[in-house]
Image (cartoon, rainbow, N blue to C red):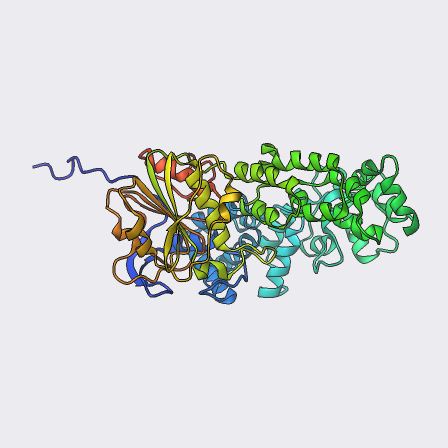
Length: 534
């Protein structure tokens, strides 16, 4: 009798997030499912804005859970954890959580004496992608673990400083508000200049001089940007506005590396239309998006506004900016002029480029319970997880061949929309619906759909069977977790039950893979994922 070489029934495609088989109660009292350590860390990481309070967890408790998971897996599974941290900072677009994670990864490995796995120095360098981040990581380490900075941390920071420090980054990020300025970082980590950048030695010396001897510090003679900046800074205040509004003003500001923030302080007066129009050509896409209200209040001309609108709506600029889709919703809500509505709608559409066009009938359930409204997505945003859920759910419905879009909380209701309608317009039809009866929404609205997508924090309070148990085993259920709580609303990782995480649209690339009958691995391990979220 064949015992080993027998044809077994093939299990369907699986995704990376798995439950452990153990059950627990959700924060709302529903019967939930615990995840394995890697899955718990992944879902927490992609939804974690450090120190951010959520409805069911304090910022401190959430940070402690994140740190404990990173430290545990840094020892038990260093390759996987290093991959997660690097991906978080790049495709995951999470600055602070990745910096904290890298520091705790190295601390745990040094404390335990573990040598196997990626070099600690490389893990530190992998999460430092913006010129102010070497100082950020150094400040975190010394504040948390003391001023004795180990060699792998110093060397990783030094590698990043060589890669990131140049004239324009010095002007933008080396400011008096920072606890660790560029010169402090160079002093602590003893970073030698990059031999392939002959100008960097002079730049490093200038960074040290302007930190310790600002009254006598002289920019390098051959650095035109720093010299031009020095010349403009030396102008009397009374002459500055005339330089900005005069012939070639925009070009002079750009050549001197002036940001809009620096210009506002330099003028020592209001940012009027002329000032904005001079600096707008050198502003990045997201700086433009954040300042639309300011442009309107200053009276920027329609001609310049049209230039801004074209840049905001440019697909290449949207891709380059690497912003979450909900950033465009925030701008839409706060910009008073209708001239920005269409370009913001276009930009939002480009940022949701990974949302698939699903065939057949799809049920999209969007969580609009009170817990989704409680906490903002970040300290700099007024938007909530409920806003993000509505953006993604609406985009899914509009792209699908035939979709039923439903909002749910204590009750549930269909959200009406028309094919081709604006995402931003549909968002105005969502409500705050109180508690979280996910199971009740499934019972009421599931009607032989070919798949179900649930955008939620998973903290349902329904009695009896969980929401995914109410859906026939042969129907795929895709849960998009936006909060990263410990307990999920259903099992995951097996056939037809999948959980994704995060606040970008990248997870939806996985839907096409799974429905094509292919497994979806962790994003930093999957070539097919193209760097998307699992």
